[in-house]
Every structure is written in C-alpha cells, then in structure tokens.
Length: 209
Image 1: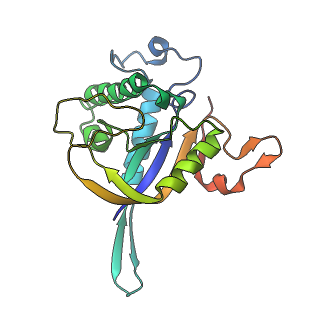
Image 2: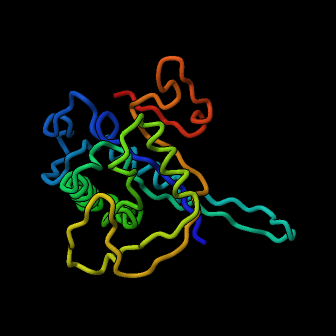
C-alpha cells in the first residue's frame, strides 16, 4: 500500500492569477514560450512539492519498532480546467516547459517534478458539478483507499485521454490518502450563506486571486 499526500490544484486564481495575462505575468528573465503560468506561482508550487517530499519523520509503530515516514506528494486537478482534455494537456505541457527552462539553473527541479509531468495522479470528477468544497470532499471519500494506474513515462506514444482516464502502460498499485490540502481561491470553509464547513479548515490553503 502506497501512502500519498494529495495536493488539490486549482488553476485560475492560483497558478494563473486573475488579471495576469501570460506575457505580462512572466518576469523579464523568464522567457518560456511553452509556459502558461508565471514563474512566481510555479516556483511556489515547486517549493511546496519539495517540502512535502522532504518530510521525514521517525516514530515507533505498535510493535515498538522504529518507522520512518517520508512525504509522497501527488497532484490532483480540482480546477474547472479538468473538464476539457486539451486544457489538461496544456497544463502538463506548461509544467514541462517550466522544468526545461528552470533546470538550466536549478537541476534539482527536474527531480522534484518528474513524477508529475506526464499525467495528474487524479482528476476530480469532471461530471460532478457542485461547490468546490463538495467536489473535493467527494474525491477524498471515493479515493481514500483504492488502486491507481501508474503511467509509464518511458513510453513516448501519447494516447488521447479523456478527463476520466489516466493512461496506464505499467503497474497498478494500491494507494491510501495519508494527508491532503487544497490550493484554491474559493472559500472552502464558508461554502455558502449559512453553511460553514469547519472540517475543511486544516486542509485549505486559500490563494489571494
């Protein structure tokens, strides 16, 4: 059983700030023609992936044996961009463009991003339309423990994937959601008028869009 630390990723207002078109959102030293997102937000996401991946805690299990827990970040797309396959491909293409550009000065970035470049670990159901809070919590409930199809990144043949699918050319492994956070510009706690979801508080990182 593989333990995963899920990062739910919104796009508009998070990776792509409102009022920041592609050309004006890049700084003068960031000339990446394949990049949709400004380097400032991509740098922040890179640091988050790195910090979660670097988590290492030592504790004792029920048998009093030492156990080392390591972080294992995975990305799940929660944005409305998930509804269009071409948008998903655009996001992944932008990730690759960012890594190709930044690794020239920061080689470690390639290793940080390697597990996330070919496909999202998961996608919130594009056919389920509700509040973002309910969409995310539905995914958590449905995927708390299940099997996941790992794509073989060495296969260069790209098959067209629907938003409901992940291309699988290698192994299927069981995973369990150990922890999760949601990066979003929507309020996932004060969901609607007279509806406050306190259970979301430990999981929410609200972006200033």
